[in-house]
Image (cartoon, rainbow, N blue to C red; front, side):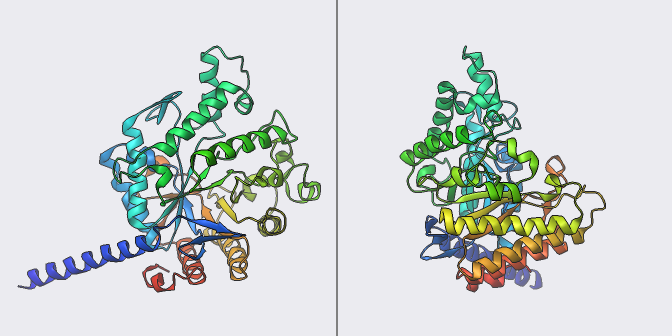
Length: 415
């Protein structure tokens, strides 16, 4: 009898848990839009406390490892996280999504389908990136190599931005993505509200033209093209946030010196109407390895505040910190140092959010589940480890949730 009672109790608990998840998913089922410098979801301000999980499609390609996606997203939901950023590409190589220009592996596409369907079920919004600046998982280099194999006179990865054949390859990929009908939900990606936004590229750069004009022209062309196919979703650039010639004072005061040759321009790259919100990343430990911990934290806050001011006053658009973290392989690293980075980041964002400011959230790099050794690196975070950093993440979700009108759900957030 005791066993039967226990089983009945567990059944009720499990049922209630799924009901709670469905209720939270239902509250997230609209499209995220923007009004001025704020994101709006179902008529209320929306804050993107979230994470990067670039590996979702890779692991979901094999049905035997799809539980990793479910487990990671459930953990994220239990900590109040609302947005995941993930790759919508894998160009050539093992488990490729795009095996050749215009050719796709259906099993890999079904992996992305599954990731979107699980995010939908659990009430997490997605930012999906179309291509990589780097050669990891193909990227610009693979596109240029494909063009070269077809006889195009391309010599540099930066030809990605100017060669007509390469640009058409990219446009074809964008069209394939937005027109894709999810095999689990039966909803076309362009009609799927679980997708919060598309991102043109992960950390676009163009060293061939340090003025930034080449990249600006490419963003203008591609942003207009994306919007011509999909007007329902938001769009951003994927930029790291380095300033260019349009902001000489910011360039001098905030850019790492090495960034001045990368051909990006935070202001010029985001001014287009087709770009809905601004993107920045933050890695002071990598950009300023010779500074002490206090100086890097000071820079972090100044970096955020500078971009917040420009998003508010010049761009008049929301801003998302699309990547940040604290590498555990930094000399003399301690968990307290990571906590300090997360606290400084989250406190700056919260103070802005309280005043209806433009910075709508941060996505830490990056979330994995326990046992995922092949994706473990100095920046990875496992929420089930219950470290002090994980507690800080949950607290930020709780605070932003109250501002965004999700207070009724705060009891489910682990803090």
